[in-house]
Length: 119
Image (tube, rainbow, N blue to C red; front, top):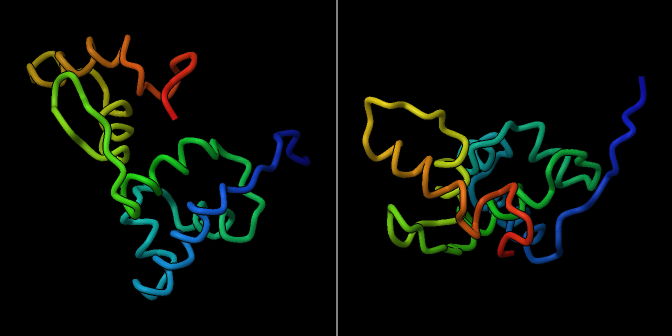
């Protein structure tokens, strides 16, 4: 069954950073591990036919490979990759930091699903 999702390419700066990282690290798998995504995601993004969340992948690349950071109300200055990682973690009531993150992320401008989230 063919995918009906729109294929979008990464912005030029993020694509260049991804290519450079693969050359520097030697393998797509190493870059994927650094980004916290699958090696197939890196492969598809490099070939220009990734159908996943291109914006989130671009944020991961900017955070992990281009040292972009955001101001987290709980953690302070963190990379955009760490911001996305914290958002993906489940709520655990036995960890007070995770509870604070869960509450703060609901209204944070950097939230992945927030309307008009900062780019």
